[in-house]
Image 1 (cartoon, rainbow, N blue to C red):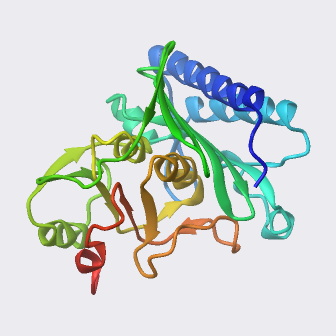
Image 2 (cartoon, rainbow, N blue to C red; image 1 turned 135 degrees about the vertical axis):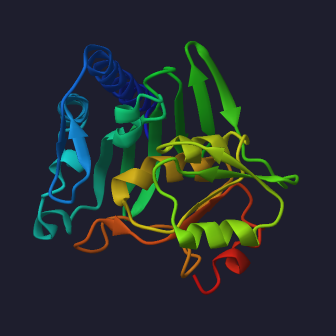
Length: 268
């Protein structure tokens, strides 16, 4: 893996901040809601952030292609040869954006040979950004203040478990019941990964479909902080751009890989 130069890292963080500002402008002024073919919502904020990020990344690294949620129609024949590319969710948590609860984010990840090697998650409402590099460290930046973050190992009871505000199935309820003493914390978008990375949450189970752009940036931040994101069926870390479909399977994100997650997901 080629480490990122500091100026490139800072340029990507700046792009994420500018996308967050564009999202907030729509947030403040009102927006219409449309629906894609899969019935997922999309707003003018998604599209404004998409355009800004794609333009910024294309200028920053013209030799590295960009795959965004809003350009996901790119055919497999085109992207299957990509070794290194940017994977972007311009507005992760559109449902949270529509609900106006503030729990949405901008996600930008650099993928190299299937692995997320650099990730940025920016929270537009607070302006906080989390970033991490594979083989390096993870950081939380609020304004001019930046601190290194690490997961909580070993976690104390009760386990602090991220629960999606928008996605909760019967299978998930069964899993949560198996976990023993837990404290449920409602949290939207990729902010769940970041809170595990900084040690304020311990576990995020997701039994149900997500897309690759939903997890890549958060996975990179989490892994750089000492945590893991594992496929629930195999225990393997997620790889990206390995197949025509861009959907993920079930997963568990953990601050401490030693937690008995296999017992929780068995048979589900």
